[in-house]
Length: 317
Length: 298
Image (cartoon, rainbow over all chains, first blue to last red; front, side, top):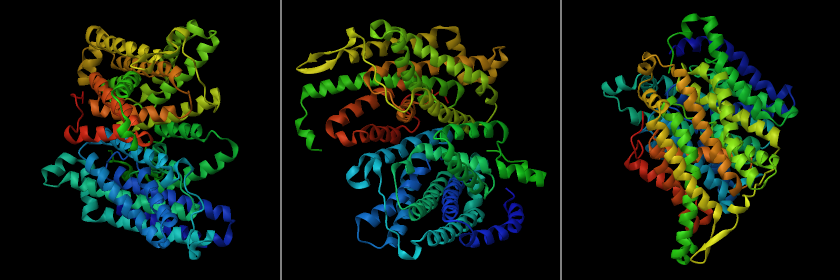
């Protein structure tokens, strides 16, 4: 996998990037602070998908359902109960982690495309319930104007909160991937039969992976509510899920930070393309086609391959 | 669940008939999806888009041909062929260069097609919904024990078995069908026999997409033709194909029956969350038969 090698490259890059991220609100307008917050949230979401997609080899085609569930869990706790905001923020990952496990129990028995198709279908059920349950979830209007604690209420406050939480989550995911569990998980991706023969419980690892992915996706969902202050059913619609897959593909899904880069590119593109045309999905579709034809290992994958030819070889799902 | 007490036998019968006509559409669309899945091993996400394009094309052709019975029959013939032509161009122009890639890339490619088609439909037909009236001889309804049953639904109930028979004939009795079934099992072997597998794939892909277009054309008079109908149908078709067994056309029939009927009965019992019923049925089926009801081709 070469994760340590890649780590060495990125640590030099990491320090200036961190400095820029920390000082950002001092130098740019509120719009760009908001945009970078959105990039961090989406990047965290894409990285959490990549945990199972790129590193677990699981065709997680409906990841947005965990993101949306996390966002709705926070929004509902804040608006429907008198509990403090922070309880809501804790409820989000618990709900989605549980949903990940429940869906996992049904889906991990299947593999690859079968798994993915079933997941799209089950996730769509969650979407449909959120979409139709007007009394509870606000239906297709969603819930808007969700209050945020004063401490992180300003756009700068929300930004620093998002930065702190997403970096912590990224670090946690990185540690998980380097742990024995993470190694085994990657081993399962590369050769499930051999792992099974070695006595590794493949499905149990995949189930745990599913729960973890759901957990981190919902952290991103809760951060989205912090930044945006609203939730709507599109957050758990399956086209968003495939959009996240595109982010992973675009950045390079065999590299830990690839999805982060892919998310940043897609968020930027969507924001600026949106100014000129309403046909964003057309643009996204064409970007995806070009990617598949010309850049299947992603942007970061291409860069790393040119820097160090060995890093580009010997990887395939 | 307050409505549960008021369900009468006649209402149930009517709802079952409505469910069966819905099944027809679901079967036609998902059998096409299943065919492509079985032979090419690709869940064609753009299948729903082709269904939507079929519906919009039916509307446009019917309007161009002057409407009425003639317009409808012309549209019903031409629109699915138009969809087949579109899929042929996409397959030969872009898709066929990717067959060597892994499945995930192929799936994502069909997703990109879906994104592009979705916006192209918006560009061509605008964001408004369209509605098409059925031809005169299929309008109105007759009564079953005092409940009205639309004539058009009866027409659908006749078309369904016809398509099923046609598919059976195609896969079992024609040469291309036999080659396609062989390619589904062992594509290297078929290639070694001197058959151009790439063109077999093209043929199967086009037939599958034709069925999506036909489903769209048939559904056009029964509902508003809108943006977003591609999303709904593709999820339903995925579910149907999964419970039926991937790539098995008769599985698609069985799955469509289960889906259509549980949906129809769900509407009777709990209208707001009728959608929960077919999903519950799917989960139950999968708990007992994780690979679907009938034997899948892979």
